[in-house]
Length: 159
Image (cartoon, rainbow, N blue to C red; front, side, top):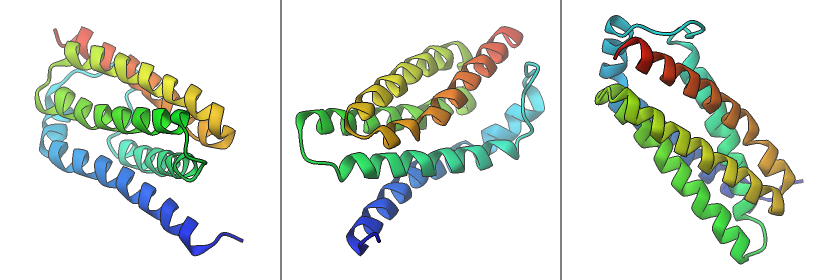
């Protein structure tokens, strides 16, 4: 049975992660509408409703993974893992602003590829501490891989 301190850690990390994603969504909401109306999108583009659902699930999985790492024994590798987590979360936040608000699709693509690399590095470091935490990040990496395809398609179709 999980004690209340662990529940608080899980809840806190999930809340922080969802809050970052929610703030990003809030700041881009008007631009997403404009994007959907004016930007040519590549094949396999999902309906707009899919994105908040998928991202909500991914942010919860990310938060659970971060909590598991945070609750592990203090060490240099744990510190590295948490730094990678915070950096990739910040990069995730700013990608939406670059892509939707600024519509700098080429720069957003480079940013997203760099984010993908940080996510992979985070997964590999998480794996050294907690295999479950690491595996919880794999859907995120796969979704960002799909996002790279979409970003590339948008950049190509809207030069």
